[in-house]
Every structure is written in C-alpha cells, then in structure tokens.
Length: 308
Image (cartoon, rainbow, N blue to C red; front, side, top):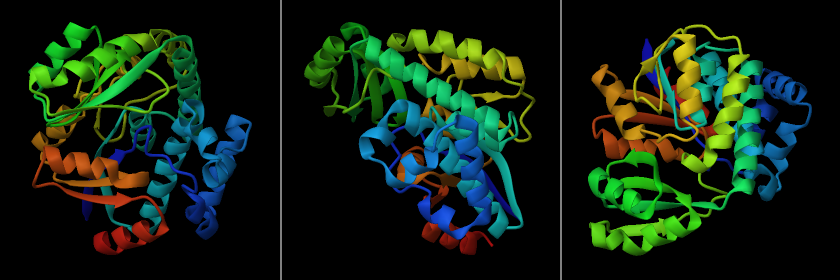
C-alpha cells in the first residue's frame, strides 16, 4: 500500500499550459475541467491552457487554477495507483484549500467557488493598498522577526530554514531589503508580486472571506489536514473556518507544518502542482523525506509507475 502525504501548491506555481495534457488524455480530467468552468461561469480551463500569462497570474485566476490542477492530478493518480493511501494533507497558502477538498472537508465545487472568491478579495485588497514582499535568504527566524518589527512589516512565510518572506507596505519592505545585512541576513530579494499577501494589508480580504466561509458546508476531513496558521491538525469545521480565515493575514508556517507531519511519522510526500516548489522546500526542512512531484502527464505516469 502506497502511504503518502498529499501536498498542494500555492500561488506563484501557475504557468500557462497547466493541465492541458491532463485534459487531452483523460475523460476524468475533462469532466472536472467542465464542472469547474460551469461552477465559475467562465472558462477557467481556457485561461489555464492558453493564458495569456497576465490573465493567469491575476490572483482571482491563478488561485482557482492551482486548486483545479491539484485535484485533477490527484484524481488521475488515484486511477493509476489503486492502492494509493493518502494519510494526511497540507498545502501552501491557497493549497490548504485544495488539501481540504482532497480530504473531503467540502465539495469540489464549493471549494472552487470559495477559492475564486478568496482570490478576488485578495486582488481587491492588493489594488486598494500599496504592498510588496521580499524573500530573505540565510537569516534565522529571530533575526527576521526583529527586522520585520523594525521596519513595520509582517513575516508572510516561513518557507524553509533560511528562506523566509516578509510582507507589508512598500516603504517598509524597501527598508527591510536595505537593512537585512545589518541583521545577519545574507540576501534580501524584493519579489515581483501584486501586493502584500499574508500581512495586515490583507485585512479587508480576510473579513470578506470570513463571511463567505460561514456559508460553506463543511465536515471533518477524512484524513488529517495540517493548517498553515497554526501548523497543527484541524478537524472541527468551526476551527477549520477560523484557520482558513486567519491565514489571509497570518504567517504561512510551512517549515513547522512539514515538521509536524514528520513528527506524525510521515516521510513520503506527493506534491501536486506545477514547478516542484514544495519538493525543494521539503528537502530543506527534512533531509530524509521523499517527495514525488506531479505537474503534468509525464511526471504523473513516472510517479504512478514508482508507486504502483
């Protein structure tokens, strides 16, 4: 039996053409893409397959695109690996919603709609504020927190040891990039993003998402899901809603989330999404972990063969 933790990609992993080969090769995939286009009232599949890049990169488009891509990849993997046994799930930021859908917390369509709304709310918050983000390489958590406090910004992501992202007003991020070396941080790179995700500048999006989440039918997930905000397993619907809501302005504690899964005894992970970003992060967090990455038909078939 192939026991594995499912990991789902976050915003930034998207690329034009994602999922197109799944759609061409599989009736199951075509059905899911069709359901998604119908649920959203526009052709998300066309944006994924054809772009243009500026359209797919929009927060309101890339979030549902990654959600859909992850769940299509999982459906096709399950068809190919009959003894696949997902033992837990997690996702980076937006990917946490995909993880819950995979675990049965809410339906495919309900999850897709809420993710599309989340993306729209975050897009609106980006347009209404002047925010930015910066990746810090080679700094410890305490140094980064001290720098964030000094510059009036938030820690957006604890992605891996020595790889932390700051988020906040443009002036604060510029100051943090300038002062990073004073705090013993090797490199600070300003990111090309639409706004300050996972910071207090996303408060309007968090409030709107909370209202939407209140109306989404949820049940306890069938497998443990580790949340970003608490880096803990959440199973009660009220707590799940709160974690998904708090995640919009709160830090993504990915390092701790993976360590939590390792503590639970898991060493085998399957990343579902473009780009192999999560495999790189997991390798930095836990040297003994094995990560299989599925982003297209070729990698799906290769992983299915290894697991089968």
